Amino acid sequence: MALTQCPSCNKRISSKVKECPHCQFVLAGQSKEDMEREWLRLKQEKSDKLVSRSMLALLIAIAAFTYLFMQQPMPNTWQYGIAVGAMVGGVVWFLINRVQLLFLKKKKR
Ligand SMILES: [Zn+2]
Image (cartoon, rainbow, N blue to C red):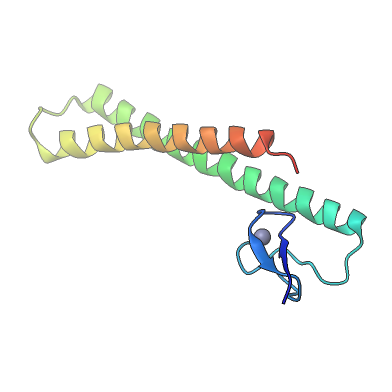
């Protein structure tokens, strides 16, 4: 059984499989052009997902910030804790998605 590299995720896979077990990239019966197109489509899909996820994260951070700003809950209350947690979590999540997006765009085969 020969090993080959998945053109999409670059993981080692058997050359006999029809579909990459890691990323579901379809390998069987495709010309080089088909593979290229499929790869670009997957990449686009991934980046779309990352963009919408980062937007969601940003939305959570903004909502939490707005709540803190408008309601001004007392520190040491659970409302305050949740709002700060959501704000920090949202910002961190947003940054993680942005960094992943950056790596995805840089990725070349
Ligand atoms: Zn793969």
